[in-house]
Length: 391
Image 1 (cartoon, rainbow, N blue to C red):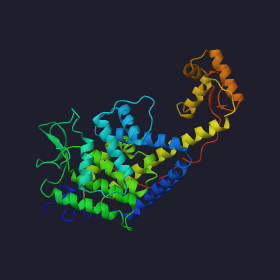
Image 2: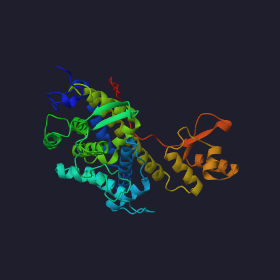
Image 3: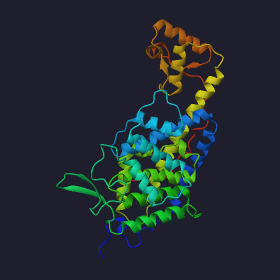
Image 4: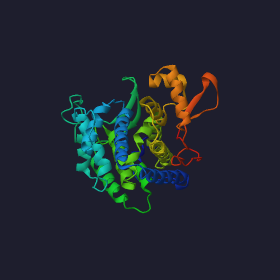
């Protein structure tokens, strides 16, 4: 008997298996990071929470498209998100069909976690991804419809000698396979034996393997992953962008998908990569929220200080982390756009008021950093498990 080339050719597909012991440390780390993020986010003021959520949603949309090599107009997408969230933008951009559709899709995925995920909803997602009024839409895409009878392959290299990285199941039988997946997705949500984070990773793998559309399968897969994560922890999904972490290891993402789709039914390696990437996104969010809280603590401490506009500008740049190794007098002068004498006077004043501290070193190499205790929220759970990155 000839061995199957693709995982979906196995007689037992889609009965996937994994090694629970190998995944346990990663699962614990992700769960603990989720708890930390939920606790930290609860300390952020309400209006700032909304801003952080907006920035996270924007990052998820922009990076998910960037994974596929598409560059979006970030300002237009942000304006569409803000409008749908009822937020006022200082300089709103005219919404485009593309940005409106992406905003609708993203907000439906994370904001309608309790709604059934059935075929009509999936097809609506595809219509939002490819709005009919978008003049850049390739004519070959069947919008809001499953793909046609042509073979669906992921290829690279020369046209006459392509490298086939993946081939999806044939069109015949796709409807039944997709129905089976959608039924599993709904049923598995209430399965006490399946961890919700593992379910998100399995859903990601199964859906992208089916590749049910002419185009947009990767972006819809990541939206589906966001839906699964929102069902697992609705308060946390608003503050971390997993697509950004996938983009950071884009080559690894495609590599682990290809090797897993060519392997057997054991997807432990894929789930290790998925959980590690999820953990990375949670840690990034922890650091970002911790920075927001640190800025709030700093300005509360110094709310009675009389500072110039230039001093406030430099302090905010430092609080934003723009000068990781501290700021020098010449850098202060450039950022604040003041004379050398004024920069020296401002720095001395900030030292006296306890806003800055002098870092080790002297002379022209003297640098200054924010004088504030480090926040305790972003202490990420370290991962010492092997298989941090799947080959």
